[in-house]
Image (cartoon, rainbow, N blue to C red; front, side, top):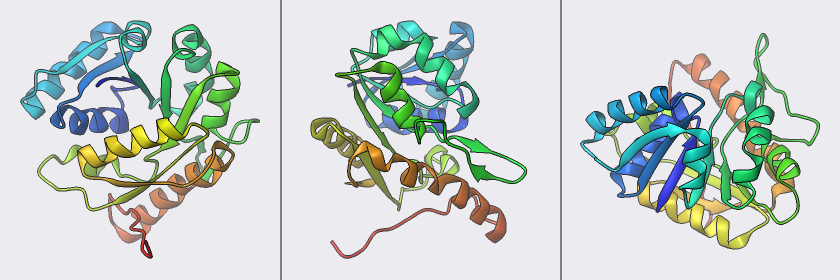
Length: 214
């Protein structure tokens, strides 16, 4: 599968791209700067030994992808989605962004209730948006010598898209579960600032979740 990662030069997007490339997916790192994206892609190719990673500008990345992952800083989320609306509207989108504020660290959602709901509102009727992987550590993802021992939740209104995302998780060693519809996005996204705080409190970099009872 061809997967564009918008924000693929950031910690989470880049680390997820490494794992997806190692799982034999074609990864297209997107950035506002094509040069910056290609520089990140070259670093990723060296880190993974995989040739199936390239970098380009955001618009080109989205147009050539089968699935788009949004992994941008929360401050630029709305502007990025609006700028790419024409390209994104026709694509399945996995939004892994988290609206956070600092001092104190807290969840700071947009008016729509969550970043994923903001994406859906901007793209409009007929869009396909899922959210997930918010509780998976970027540090853990980037450590390619360590097997992933973590679960994740996926939400959205499109059952087929959720199954696709769950399958991607399996490809990279994450057990993911369907946790419901997009109106629950705030519950999922808000776990990230909590986990960041716990990492600081307990001196870790990759606290996550495991689910039981299945």
